Image (spheres, helix red, strand yellow):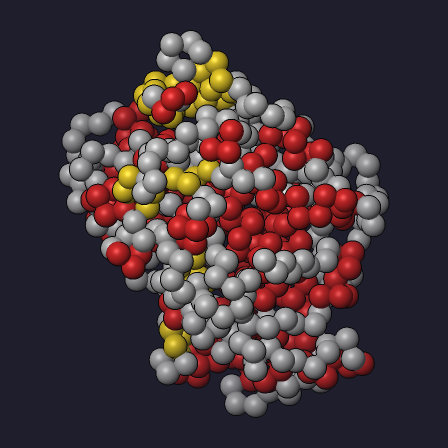
Length: 531
């Protein structure tokens, strides 16, 4: 499999040449040439804006999304490639009869991943992938902003609108990149000049603040922009042709300025929600989330997505996660996910099937966390989540309507408006055709209501990039946390419905040594390694 690795912030000068996405569109002149002449024209700017997508690469679409889903116990991977098996290595499993099962090799997840945080491990350094891809996206956005502000830029017809859209595009992607980095790494860098870096590492909380700052700058550009044919046609040029959730070349972008702002509000709500434990959240925090989600993504809004493609455009050919990984035999559906479907949920009936070759037990001999009876029905045969057929799998890049509605639900439940919150849970289930009875106004107490919320986040947000964040904020992955009442495929394939899993995963990841080997932190008081 071809691997495309992007260099780190310290080497970002090497990233300015844009790799292929729409092959003719992204065939830019070398931006390193004097004057960045390729970015002095409207056509060059549209190509560079589209070039953001090419910066994610396999590191993000396959590896990063895979890490998050397996650490959130939506799926599991026993394969050792890319340190996946270490990323979801649980500390121990205690069966209902008291038997303790520990992994036959290696130690705790954090110990194993930290031991591989070295350039000599190459692709097996899990810490490097999200870091590299997100800083590559950020650098491309910096390049766009510099070009927009350059007096050499020549744009005709609706020049002010086009510059605002380009600026909003760049600020959005900077906000996205910093959001991912601040939600995953103990610390990071704020870099606002293309091809340059610094040693001023700051805590992840400062990275999240920078994300929200850039989101607000994007909103400032979008406010007051008309949603007309000129706007839609211009924005659509920044999006790969095969990603038609945004619209098409014929229709123009479906992402109105107002819908774009709502996408931003939802992401700002996520940034607050997923970077505190539930116990740390205050009434003021829940009120902020409620305000943002009330003004967040609506059911008919366009959202930021990617779609699987047969061409070797954004990732290596046919390598998209998790939709293909599940079908291709790399990734397996977790028993703990399936147990979170409620009885009678049509989503389970549509999607969950028995594993074709029989129950998977202690796959690869690497531990009983790697066991399942289940698989997902493919999209092409009526399922929702998995496919290895190009064009069928849609990958959310940022947030979704369901996530927004469930954040609103959680905020209302925590603020004492239980039935209002449960009403949002019902909306998501109806939106996804779950065919479950309504739970609002049925007399549930706050604890019962929150359990409905928890289960719906597990099911309603499958493949929507939040399962690890949720496991972290709910305390599932921390030492002393874990999951009780868990379903496990035990020795000899015996199903245990009341086991306890202790995960003991890292809450946040270390800065990769790929960065630190070339960029010494200027402030030693800022940690670059998580506990």
